[in-house]
Amino acid sequence: MIKNISLQVLPETASNSDLLKKEVSIKANVKRSDIYHIEILKRSIDARQRIIKINLQIDIYLKEAYIKKQGKQPDYKDVNNQEPVIIIGAGPAGLFAALTLLEKGIKPIIIERGKDVQRRRKDLALLTKKHIVNEDSNYCFGEGGAGTYSDGKLYTRSKKRGDVTKILDSLIHHGATPEIRVDAHPHIGTNKLPKIIQSIRETIIQFGGEVLFDSKVTDIRIKNNAVRGIVLHNGTKIDSNKIILATGHSARDIFELLYKKGIEIEAKEFALGVRVEHSQELIDQLQYKCKTRGEFLPPAPYSIVKQVQGRGVYSFCMCPGGIIAPCATQPGEVVTNGWSPSKRDYPTSNSGIVVELKFEDFAPYKEYGPLAGMYFQKGIEQTAWEIGGKTQKVPAQRLVDFTQNKLSQNIPKTSYIPGTTSAKLSEIFPLFITQHLQEGFKLFGKQMKGYLTNEAVVHAPESRTSSPVRIPRDSSTLQHPQIKGLFPCGEGAGYAGGIISAAIDGVKCAEKCSI
Image 1 (cartoon, helix red, strand yellow):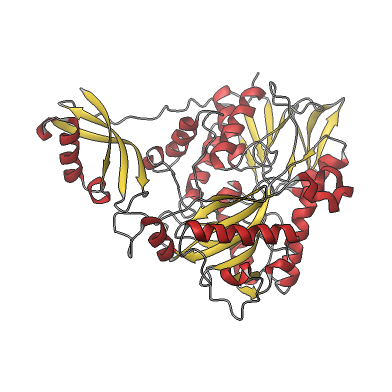
Image 2 (image 1 turned 90 degrees about the horizontal axis):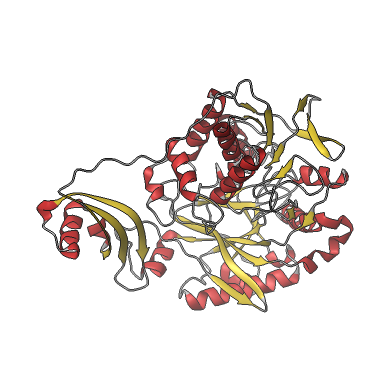
């Protein structure tokens, strides 16, 4: 007999099988000797009260042996001799589109401008240590996309958009821990995700798909309003009458290409701001209401949203026990993001704190039409580079100093390895962004007493929260309304916001390709 129950237990109980078994027997009113196995299905932390509890949903196997459940195993077909579908981009949208095509018996050809996960590491090291930006291989471009080396957070609110469980099962099939099915906010970690991405690539190749690295698309061939294939930077042409465009939110050259070819695109509202770093110890104290985080609790995250004069100001991509990374995709710009390893064991935590933007904010760049938001974004990144000394050093300010528009006399060492330059961040942003961030931080400090401290450091900018462009598509066919066979997909096309939602969109586009 299998009995399902929900219960709350102390963290030490959740971490000890004997203590948990005792608690379950009381809750379920069964003998401990009758409990053959306890299977945890869902786990989350309730830190609202001073005594922190762990919420568990479990299956109790009563006088019944436990047989390990396997996720649904994929049925990949040999596609060596099948007609190809071109996928531009090897991020989560592109990779999961390719896996879905294998299930449908269609050959995927992934075109990736960047390098594979192993060779990509060298370019990240050059960017971090020597401030050298490789425009095609960086934190945003390369195998696995932006998520590979920026954390691997798997939490999504997009559960109604598609089968999240299928995505998680596929990641587990390719090497992720089964714990990602259990945790309320699953996370793989930058140190583990590259091997999983490599395993997905090996599956694609094993069943007859192709993955081409160092292959930058310079043109999409179109005839009679239908795609015919692509042209690469070296002049190579690849034919296909179906293209899944999954380039990610930073592929500005693709947005420019579509605009120049007269293919309809739209400006999209997004959010932009800063990345703030606190000590993880402080965040633990604030969130767990304790002096020292217990050994059975993970490093604490936070999520906070405020309305300031009609605009949302909110935390974004919060990284407990993580570091801030340089994420520029072109020379002459500074961009920040954050990531955590699987153990989240760095002494610092960081989060993007961003302001909701509106179409009217892009008015100074209206000459660029639907690319106005992109040029708004780009202008701020270039200003940060200038103020930072024309290097990858990031303009920074102590948090209280920022709220008072006061130049910090010194900046404590942060996790951002290229280094910092003390600056007034108000010189980087339009006035309304600065004012909204300042007021937002003050409100955060009222909600989380101790958050507003001059020991925290603000880094600018956090500008790549999502795509500044949307590429329209028909809601039923997912094809571009103007170009037959062109399937705008994922975060870069404006239809996703993270690894899971991008993967789901890749699956949906691939399914439409197979019709």
